[in-house]
Length: 325
Image 1: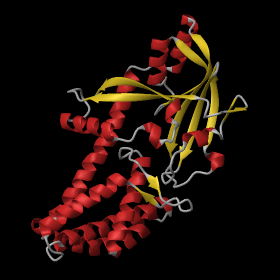
Image 2 (image 1 turned 60 degrees about the vertical axis):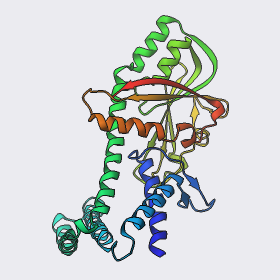
Image 3 (image 1 turned 180 degrees about the horizontal axis):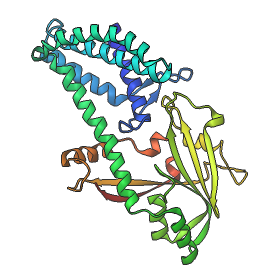
Image 4 (image 1 turned 180 degrees about the vertical axis):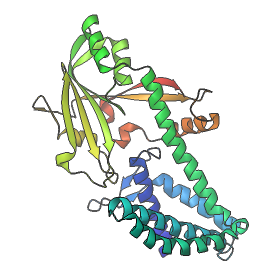
């Protein structure tokens, strides 16, 4: 019972941090406590654990038959923990390499003995944690690499902000009242949603905010360091919002901390423009075709940015576009 509770809560926490770090698709996360930030519930993970538990019970039928799978799982966790502690000694605690190597070697030798002895049981159930770990690695690496390729494809059809501003002046695009917020992964270039909106509607709002959300390596970010803004052109501003990897993003609340041209932003009166990419797997250089198809599926099942960033849906306009990987 104790081990199962630790597994469930640990799976929720690790999944939440992986989503914040961008190595897993966005999933629905519920906070079950108003006083404790780390007390969360992720339905998709819970259902996955349920299904996997049933499969393991029906396959192995008894705890003694499951011992081989459990043993190799524990042994691999032990040696991974030792390697992580060694990295912490070198890069965080700034230990000399000789000292870190001397301390870690003792534990690594012991852990390797456990791993080697359990490897003899791979064919008798030890393959289960290896298979699960392999599948999770494929999903995470595909999502991470797919996002990089998607950003590259979007950048191919993007404009620099300098060229975009020049086009606005030369084409005499009409400016309309209001505040428009365009979210993008990289606001050094013109967001795709801004380009599409300008080309099709031939208007630009008087106040335009290019918003980028960044996840830091620290668990939490203070409100004093949450938001940074800068003026870049007539009515255009960049706003950077920072979150720790254990925090739940809340864009309207963060924007209340920002000021543009000395004036506060009213996030409840602004219009949010979000890009909705439809990914198409192709034979272009990037990833294997089956991984591109997997990435396309992951983009479809990922939680929409509106819900993940807690943006009022009635104030959101999504602009769809097809992207060939």
